[in-house]
Length: 211
Figure (cartoon, rainbow, N blue to C red):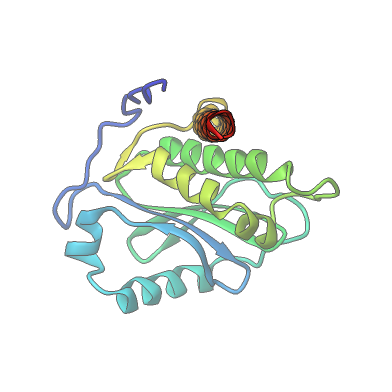
């Protein structure tokens, strides 16, 4: 198996205490604000949103301030909600969001949202020939890959990767590894079955000769 490459942080800003620069959660919602896939750093869950109820309340507050998604893909936009900067991108009935403190580098967060959106669009397009872009059903049909994307791009508040090609290459590598493992397991099973059959036939022939 090929070892997973170590990704180097693009942005060195880490989770810090309240009042300092923060990297916030990454979310994927439907047009009604319902969760499709979300990721919170451990520090955020511990210090800011220790319960699911608090997380959902904050998510509802943010999504209520954003415009409704349209049938066409929109560019990344920004909204200032309370003391937070929200960068988001919409398409059909899907909303991708990343939230940062007002002191965070907006350009880096913008690149993060673009990378997440482009990667999700890329990994889901193969499952629907007539797809008109990223939508809720495609996200749900490819949820494991979508969650993998969120896991790859941010690690405990550090932005690890924003380039679509590198993100999707990691997913392809994992898929190919799983396919190779499955093929190897099937090959080993076939060999074991063949060996057992030969031993059984050999035993039967020997017993017939003795008779």
